[in-house]
Amino acid sequence: MQRNAHQSVFHALELAGCRPVLVPVEVDDETGKATGVTLAGIEEAFACFPGGKALIVMTPNYYGKAIDLTDIGRLARQHGVPLLVDEAHGVHFRLGHPFPPSALDMGADIVVHSAHKMLPAMTMGAYLHVTESSLVAVSHVARALRMLQSSSPSYVIMASLDAARHYLATWTSSHAIALQREIHQVVKDLQAVPGLAVKAPMEPPYDPLKILLQAKGFAGKAFQNALEKEGIFPEFAEGRDVLLICGLEIQWTACSLLEGIQRALQSLTAEDYSDVNLQPMMHSSAICFPYSYHDLKGIREVRVPFHEAEGRIAAGQVTPYPPGIPWLIRGEPIQKKHVESLQSLMDVDYPLQGDGLDMTQKLLVFDM
Image (cartoon, rainbow, N blue to C red; front, side, top):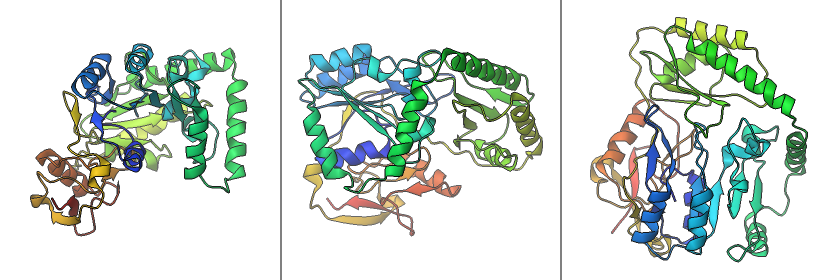
């Protein structure tokens, strides 16, 4: 799996008692954002740590960059492991052009789609797609779902999922043409705004509904605050960047969006805003956690000050939300960079989730 996976993936591994193997992730040269795994990185992981039980991949990333899974799926089958894909932000990829191919069309065994992110579905609404094969038994997945899910599901959420499915089924090429024309015009207009940098679209495959902006000379959080005062609500801000997500139905005009962004830029002052970096610590080669989650059961947990945490094994998780990528993972060795970067998030009061950090700013570690 990759280090920049959603916190829910690590929760699942803990429930299963697994020992995570982290695959190296590429970083986009233009944006500096972690993109996705590579075939070479996965081959290295299989070579260094044989005996894996599954390959878990996230695509697209939170900024819209997708990866081609065709060869990766073939490699997983050669090693006899299923390919599980977190395609939470790519439920609309089945619509075809101008969107990237879906993991469902590239040999994935199990794919999860968060319908509520990009489709007209209620929050918590998601789809789980399973391909029956020698690697995955649908009956086993169904049994696990009965154990983990509520026996009293929300019929309102399920109805919204069916409505979202109908929305996809009735999408036409004219919808795609109109949407692509509108997004292209917005990006073109934004690129002409003084003091504004547009970092999207990236190299394909890329979701055109994701637009990364930068107010030159200002932190992304300051720009986000200014945009929200104009009624424009970004997904989140990081460092110098602000991420906008456009819906499949355009609820605004290019003119109104442009005017709001221009007013937000004009309202920014020379006040010193701190940057927020939401990119977790990446590794240049495949690594394995020192212990499985099964091995860690029963070991005493204690809280220690930041200056005593380096070199210990994290017993809790700390996650900036959004985007939900853990900064510190249960079972992960704590390094100096973890502590320093976490302190920078706390300095700007960025919202953090998880039990790894308490109100006294002490980290939860294993007493070993």
